[in-house]
Amino acid sequence: MNDHLPIARRRGVGLSVLLRVAGPGLVVMLADTDAGSVVTAAQSGAQWGYRLLALQFALIPILYVVQELTVRLGTVSRRGHAAMIAEYFGKGWAWISVLTLGVACVGALLTELSGLAGVGLLYGVPAQLTMVLVVGTLIIMALTGSYRSVERIAMAIGAFELAFLGVALVAHPGAGVMLQQTINIPVTNPQYLYLVAANIGAVIMPWMVFFQQSAVVEKGLGPDDLPAARLDTAVGAVITQVIMAAILIAAAAALGTAKADGTGPALNTVQDIAGAITPVLGATWGKLAFALGVSGCAITAAIVVTLTAARTFGEVMGVRHSLNDHPREAPLFYGIFAGVLVLAALVVTSGVNLISLSIGVQVMNALMLPFVLGFLYLLARRLPEPWRLHGLRGGIIAVIILVTTVFAVYAAIMGIWS
Image 1 (cartoon, helix red, strand yellow):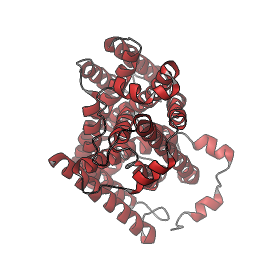
Image 2: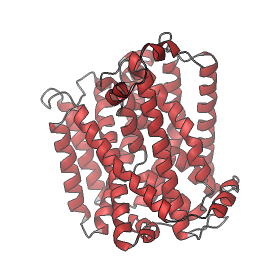
Image 3: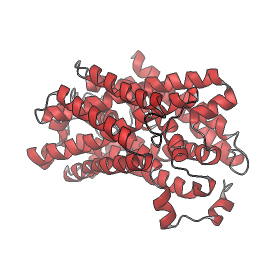
Image 4: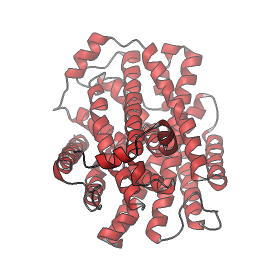
């Protein structure tokens, strides 16, 4: 279990080291609590009360284990995830992984932009105008910034997600009811299992694996930075799941109508969610807190998933794919970045239903876990010593990945077939 202690002793996690290294973990975790995750957590609280609360905290170590492997791969190999798949398993498998990732990125981006459109509608801003402003701003940011500047922007915007913590605290959830419902888990109910799969898919997403590995490479981190990068990831994992729990608690406490059979009220639009959980702060401040929270998570995630799609296609095609490259040096990278944003914005303005889309995307993520986590584990076993995943640690991680994957796929299939 302590296969990296020599590195940790040689280079401790001092404050100066942490400040230099921190970023990829926090950014990807703030993006993890995206608009689709907000919808999934709110719907979980509305329909099942606190019966999915324990799952949010149980996913913290699982999320850390998965993302720690990406950090290990990136810092040691100095290559992106798709590039490593191509090297060890061939171009064919790399293209399959990239195309799978592309579907996940487009699905996620649709939920982010839909969430932002919904926030705009709360204040009477037409969806078309919101899309023009958001897409235009993100494209300009990418064209004029470096990786470090974009990372800082993403962390600053993502910090607005903490507004959900205030909403949960002010909602005054009942401790007795929370405890009773938390331990009363209807594991045989297909609708419950469907939301279990959605919550797992909302936390462990394919694009997170690709983004964080590429981010640590683009930031220039190496093996000596691994302890600090792990801490960055661990802090981010706790923050994202505390935010997810806060959203669920706020919805459950504000509505207080969830029943044991999951027949709580359906929240069909962003406006429905805002109307359900923001009255605890008053109409004006409640709506503002909700708008800031959703905007923070959606914009951060939009940056991350769009960068992931553009970078990964560039990796497999062997062309330049970095924010540190000038647009003339990496036309494909910037073209994909802008093209995906514009395409998603056009779909959003067509009037797609955010709630159905968001939960469906999370369930799709759960079904993709065997493919994504399988490659992640196999690549970690091909690293050189002393970073190779093996022994007791490798066995424990294999069990965690296997159990998570099997349960997520089973829950998703049972929920879909019900």
